Length: 532
Image (cartoon, rainbow, N blue to C red; front, side, top):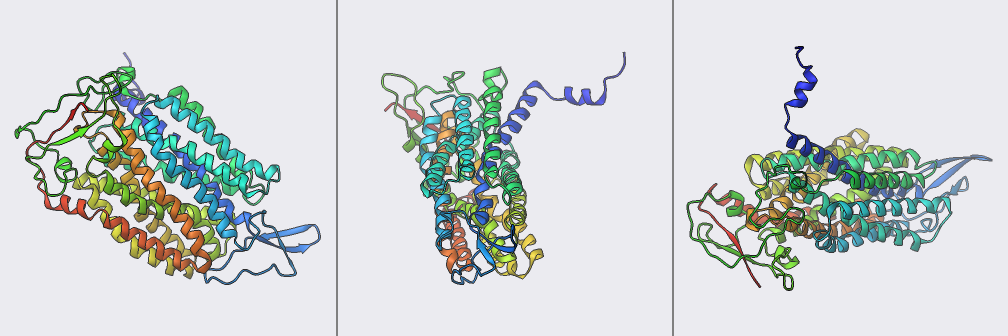
């Protein structure tokens, strides 16, 4: 018998469960990357919506993106040899506020919708819920681009399109995090989710390149093509997404509690019970991170009260029940400020590069992808460090501490030339995106699938939505404030970003203190449920 080819031996070395996990990892990665791909075009097109062009001779126009200088020089009228090529209504003196309104309308709707999305999503099949969101998002992303072809100059049209798109995009994050949490346990979760969370940066990079390809010739396609990609991925989601390993008789690395039912994965409410058992080793994260202030980990018992559905014996975790999980509030408020920094870069970085380095919209969009390249390494690095140290809050705190002075250096050095801008984009991307990536993935999954919740997979969707929803409030405020501050000079924008990083660090102080002061192990702790 002939020996098997090396490739076949390699394939056979992995179990069926491992292949399915790899498939879900890649599929959810691509699904959410497509969401971010569709969010990036607006930041690329901003430089095209407001610009001036210098007339060379009759019938030929040379386009030059011109924007207000970082020094805050007053708005000027085009010179005699220039023509106003802006797209109404963004041809006004307050164009930066109008462009900021587009960001704010999307992100504000996203923040509000996220709180509802987790509650709705935990009661619907993930595959259907995510498919609907992707198809709707693709439609409204493309609708924005149709404004170019139908010559629409109504601010209300673009704002409403952004609002609806923001609402439907909230279906994405709780769904993919819940699905991934179902398939992967806590072992090396920081590394796994650090790699997986690079979908954010990959989507931003692809969105920048796709939008930049058409921005100077036909900016409507900068939205229509990403919209078509999101919709196509929605069809792929419907055809292939598997919500839980039990659906195909795969083993799960997450412990399944008694009373867990295939398909619904709800848990049965139990009578309140208290235990003094000190023989079980305590998870260091439960002892150090998830215990209330002033309580000794050996003797503490948590009781989470979940309201039962009328007449039934099953219940998903409530919004207030999720808030009572220790650590959720602190990380949520930290993410509020951390995400405001990240999304300010997402929405305004290409325009800033245009101002400072005097590049056109396409070149600025391509250069801005370096921030996302740095974000890929930052997210992975944060995951590796937090896995090694078993200290999520401390890892976030260290990167936030380094991010503030880095942002100040960026604001100073980036004006010295293109080479300095490239280096600072990579470093800033790593330090800004690292904490954001860690909190929205590994930390959310830790809090939402902790053993204290008795394996309630629905808690993961709600916890994820609370944390990311709170962060999305900051994501809405950051770009809005940047639009208001940028006319007075970009330095003021960077001061705002440094202040936000300091606030994010402040909300983690208590958790960092717990992680650094507690021992690695202690006696067991148990969270129990009672009827209410």
